[in-house]
Image (cartoon, rainbow, N blue to C red; front, top):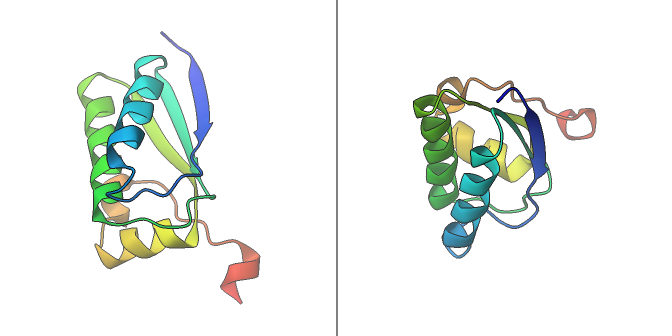
Length: 101
């Protein structure tokens, strides 16, 4: 299976949406060998959302697949930075120019 898929999440990655988001993410990784996540539209994330991303990365690693976060919203970056998890994810945290100034 050498296919790639990109999905964009716009719903918050919070405890209130964790169960639904878990299902979406597991279905997405099951149908591809290389999954790209665009999280640029996620307006809120908590530690439940962080746990979902960690779970997805571990599931991908366990099954020989790859998951990359290709776009981070400010909320996603804030939680990843706060929890000092940037190195664990291994994805570049790109800050858009409009937010950098």
